Image 1 (cartoon, helix red, strand yellow):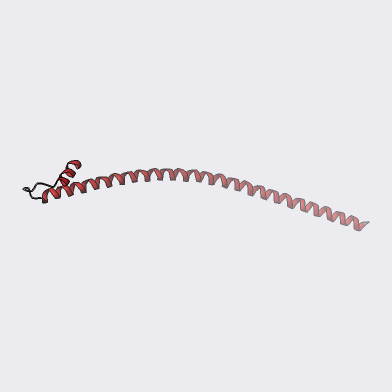
Image 2 (image 1 turned 90 degrees about the horizontal axis):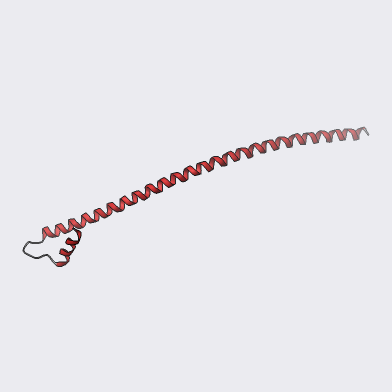
Length: 109
């Protein structure tokens, strides 16, 4: 019967040890979960900031594209005006200008 008693005591100790270990594991896991939740919140905030930054960049890009388009139009206009002027300057005064070029000069001005 003494061996039976020792066996029960040992089992009881094993159970206590297992319970202690389980409690420690649970605490460790709870800490990990808490840290993960903090990380998730932090990442979500970062994501919001990143999205705001992207929005600002998109707006800036849109404005820059508009400026580029406007600049290209102005450039095209000035080039066609320049070409018209060159045609006018290069054509002899005595010769009447061909109707196609004269119509283009009147429309651009």
